[in-house]
Image (cartoon, rainbow, N blue to C red):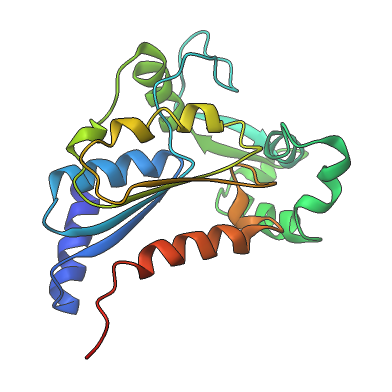
Length: 218
């Protein structure tokens, strides 16, 4: 949070502007929400794509036993989890041809030890899983939505199994002090919708929300 706040203040100073729009995805939604709560005078609008919240259903990972620093993930396992919940007849067309391969090649290249395994395995940090086990699964929220006083957009794909629409919808009524809040469920999208064929629907939804905060030029 100190890093994000430092960047926020640096950008405001560099651009000589009073406020910024903040965008978060998945675990980053909690970070951006906390930043907004702590800096209400520096944030114009807050956009949350697939935010986490208190869980009543078990997560997609095995929460038994200790949570280690990282887990080893194969490309095949990553693709299977990505497409979890997508109807079988829709899986082949959801991700544009070649995109998963480009994404996974770039992602696995960030781990210098990935090539030591056959097939290559990525060391994926478990910080998000630790937060889920310690907080979200124990009825503990990392922030209070009622403390957010700027317009908020929440967007989620209908096939998101990491942060399902039913989970995300529980946040919306808690945003009691957010003017102009809105919740949008987007068709045929997963937790990684920004990489999928319907990504432009997500982009347009976000852009329209952010444009509302612009002051017309004289």
